[in-house]
Length: 308
Picture 1: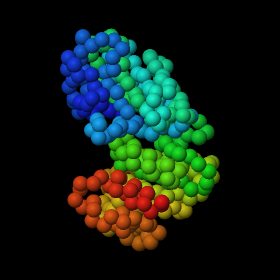
Picture 2: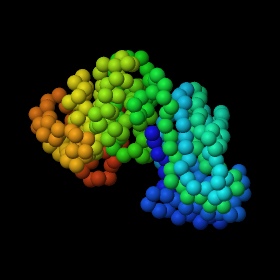
Picture 3: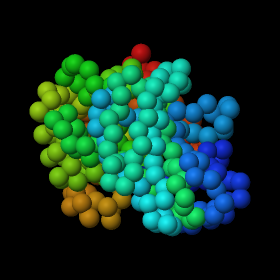
Picture 4: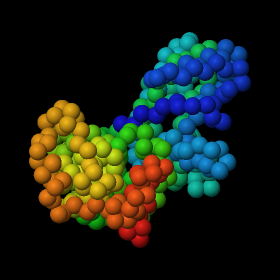
């Protein structure tokens, strides 16, 4: 499941006469004079950064897959706003749209779609308190545990990307797309989900069911690197790329204890395991030390270069 937030003012927000207050976990919007059918706020899976100065805010979706989209918000009057999903081809021409009202919150991503937009539409609302949009793939034989498989193709190898933060799937969607198109079979999971025992059982079962016998793991940040180490213990036929040298990984003792993971065993792996591939240290050296470059962008760039 991916949560989509309303993070700031932008060209995709209806500002004329609007009162907008950002709080820690919600956004208050009020405009009693806003005409019906106008867009209150929209989110895009692809943007022209030079033109709009904003990053994509939606995750990549699998062609032909069915999804559920829920609006978590308090609206006055009730049901006086709805969601519309617009689908575009590679030339950004609209090819289809879906209107989701009340309980009709499921849609299928078209095979011919290249990008999409979610719009929150006014239907007579005077105010609303917005928390987030919840987007998840619906269960099927091809669904993956707690995650999303991008660019599926035949073969026995899958690349697992461990997200440090949930929103990284949207903030770095363009970078992830570049990698997915090159390697195929790119599975995206949150690092925390991948570290749990049930998450590992689900992952192993899914991989076995679909014939994936080899897994390349990409981890970055504290959680991603820890999750990668833990998975490397459980999934013997795996290669691990991470964003820090082995002696710089900081183990989150509280998180490991909560998930009942053997801290001593992980520390032993950090010190002794020669099967890990610490690619970031080799490829970009001290480039991350400045803190000016996000590790995911740099790591995926290095990974992409190594696999061209």
